[in-house]
Length: 561
Image (tube, rainbow, N blue to C red; front, side, top):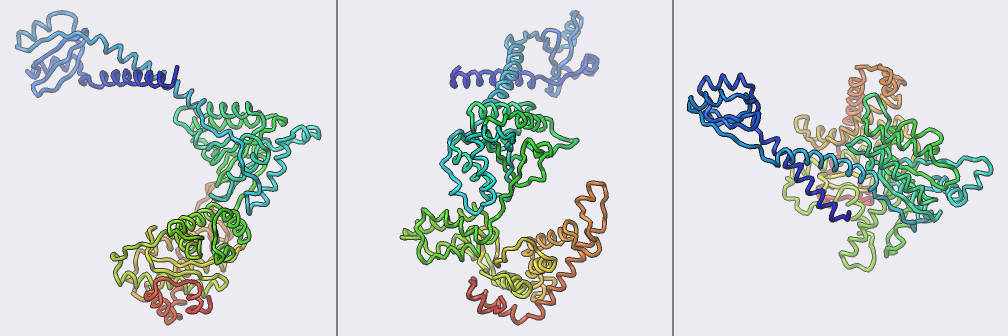
């Protein structure tokens, strides 16, 4: 059948199914024969229509019901004697057929949908042009993948030495760090087809459909010979099973496990998968023989951010005044995708201005857009009092940063509302570190609380605002993780609540301990701002005048920063 014929057949079957459902739903509610006789004795029945071995009757109020009809004629005579209108109706010849065909059509559609879902999975099969040279700042991950290139090209070389090349490799890390790019680069370097699917493509509501898709996918990969199969967001498919699991998802996962075990070492097929949460994956999926290796693809360091920026700046006309090193220094916690978006926003703005090149102002604009959103043009809805509260709030954050984390560099302070709903913001650059000490974490908590502390100090306890909601949530999360994950609480000790919970050990004192620690750090922050009240007022007044303070201006106002 052609695609048009299949579409017409599907429409006809669906119409028949709809007719059958409509015929079933439009029937009046059912009543027993004794109930009908009682209503008849009470004089409530006005009309009766006989259809085969059943009858439909209408009451005085106009409501219709159905009931069984006796086979003798005594009931008909009684109805006519009592003045009830009697009718005889034949069942529509198409009604039963419509129901039967409708149900049959539904079954056929279900089966065909399952087959289409199984065999119609859309995957890419092209050979990518991406190479390892296009991947910046992920040297360890690239080195791990380089060895697989030779395996794909000449798997027999390793078979002769009895070596078993990993069937699968798991790439894990935050979003936007280049996991898909690495998989494409592997296929591009090896010169083999690249199959790209998402884990959510296999998650279906019908039992067996997802498993069929998995089997069909691996069949296609094997038919291609040497290839790279990349499964993105595999946690949607391979989440750890439990006693309350979903049958469809477990069948799909079992199919994946079976297919992974079925690869021969000499086929030259490599399976890569990506996830942001490797801890959520089923242990059977990450055991040796399936996804043997796990490679972290983390956020880039300062030097790596510079490499990424240079890669994405290759085809962009940058002005000689643009300082990529400074941009890399300021773009702390930016992923590779976020850095690409930053330069793209700058290029869009430069093109909109019909400029000859991307200027530093374009970079500054795009940096702020990516971080906090664009500036609101209409600020008429912000009152002078709200501007003042916001100025002291942000000044509190900046002052606490300068005093508690002198190694951090304040780069921007603003009270200009943004399109992301922010009334203002303070931005600082933290030095790249592998670990954070307890003192540094407590300083971060105090900085998060400094906005609310400044409001209370200047305007009074009754005038604090909702502007600190995100700050309070972040501070609470940090204190909770210090106490319950990192063993940094004197009262709770070194125990980790997540581990204790696995054994059914749960305490009720953790929330009170987190509250006590937050209260203590809040008092410390209040005392700090009280001692620096003059500096706080000076910084807030400068914000009210200028609205935006850049790094150089902040260095003048806060020499300690």
